[in-house]
Image 1 (cartoon, protein in one colour):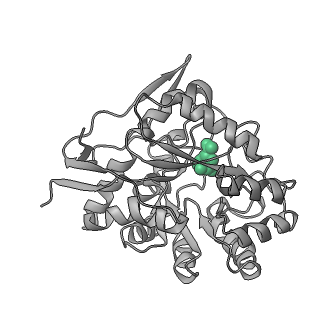
Image 2 (cartoon, rainbow, N blue to C red):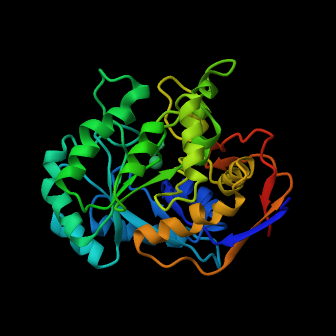
Length: 345
Ligand code: NCD
Ligand code: ZN
């Protein structure tokens, strides 16, 4: 039995860092472990143009702990009015790594998102031409569609038609939660990949109602049935190039979670790599963790792998984190007692 595992320093290909006090409080958890992260642009107001992204990147760099070697990879928040030239220039200048598609109303701070893909036709054509990845929140917002079916319906109504039209567009189907998502990515070309969160590998939809309402288990896309969780575990631990690590760590104050109409989002940064390690261990696939966490993402994005390594050791994790941010508290994902890996200093 392996008790120590050393892998190339991993990256987080989907992360919410927020801004201000929250940014300063949550950033160290990621910067201590990961070499780079794709930074989600759903601030209020959103990070929509290259100037906004450059300014946000500066605020992230200023919030880094001393000596941290961490690189934020910035994304553009696509709106109906996104200027393809600003996007392409931002990409050429190294400010934008990718652009994020939020269907308007799909999730936290997505009200300025895209109302109809037809409105960003020129943007998608430009992105396809310059090889800039499109990161999609893959859920339809049609209120007539059951919330547990929104990802599956998105594939048929939006993603398949878009990829028929823009067949060379690089697409990352973010935080997939369904067997249909896994199947779609496997059947698509090498220009399509997906990220998988730690929590969707661990919980199914029962976790939302275990003994009562559990707002800290609520995120979007919402966790699905057990068969979907098992399909995600199979995909993540397969080593296949199309699947890589994206935590979707999404902190909210406890007061915004434990309330009527509470926010979607799970803050998992303090335990993310350990939880993934436990999943790979449970699946007898520890030898595939490095591909998922450290190799497949850079290969898809056309980046080199990180220098340096991270070592995990079998052993109890410290208790889960309750952060104080200003006069608010932020509760980290409850990993239960099942995580038997910790990061070695
Ligand atoms: C994210 C957030 O809080 O910004 N919430 C979530 O449930 N994942 C937004 C998102 O990625 O959907
Ligand atoms: Zn997210």
